[in-house]
Image (cartoon, rainbow, N blue to C red; front, side):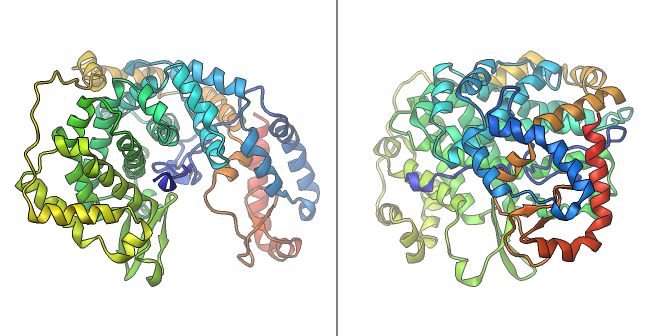
Length: 526
């Protein structure tokens, strides 16, 4: 089953992040298509430090002779992946993770926490791609930081449901920049992406302790919303927000739309996390199994996802599937090919339905039985050839169709219940508007000078080389469309396969290149 592990990518949850003019609001729609990546801390590995020191000189040289300003990034990407963070840096970041109060969301202390999460998230993605993420998982387990991450995940979820709507309703709130608010919205995506990376390991799941109940409830909330929206054809995905529509919205309305897009990809990450939890059904506490099987009835919820398949759709007569943060056109011969998301659903169903312990606990009543038998229509020979373990599922469903399973055994047990959500809600009940106004005054209304400092801080933190290494697709030549390994280092925006293609494109590219180079120079001068 480990073959169906999803190697995480940076395309989480509407991951448009970036910056703009510090004197005007930052439009999330204009931000890059990868999650705002963390940059290495002050003490970084030599290759990254060297590139950071040489970047201004490369741009200065590029202004003098743009035709010789190529950046061969293939070797740079290979160097970044294994040396993003040193072991001591990873340990320091893990130890710095602490629980924060809802009222402090977006503040200076919270931003330091967010930076730690971003750096660990990017390190986890790059190290997982090379099979070297074991150090991070061991540190998270050793310092018992998984419950801290789950607590932060639920805290920012509550902020999105309780505080963010109040901010959007405040008529006197006209932020100069929406980026500080976007960072808070994106924090949830960063945490769930990090958890998706590390929950592949059994010891991480076990180290969650009682908070595994809270994480299970979180995944259930996300998947229930995803299934409901998919059944009603209300799912908002990145392709459904064209720039011309966003241009007519106010800054806060635009942010709301971006949050809806983000929710779709966060839900897909929650699906992967849930599947990794179900991999450990034999060692999970009885309360977790009871909650998954009977309180939330996750098997029937997963059947809904199989039936409606939110990550595939028909558009203008063409079939598309959602992978790595974007919708891809699927050729007719590949339409029956199982995606990673399809595999996550089927593996979770296998874990929940074929485990002897789950079969003893699950209520196979009339409704549940009828829902589960819907799966037989999807268990085709083509699907089973791709995931042979589904033969056992097919055999189980055939048996279920002709028999009445024994009723679930009822035992008198003291069931644990999740506490993080209820604790945060009760502690802040009736204070939502007061918290929102406090954050408007102290966090989300920075001065122009503070915005400049923030902009400089983010440009120092975010490395272009790391962002490129995280991108799921390789760049293509602007002229001929071939795979590109060289970039105009004056503007760092256009890609080419050869010098000849750059020379051919220069007259068209010149004006944009001058504009982008001027913007980069102004940022360096902050």
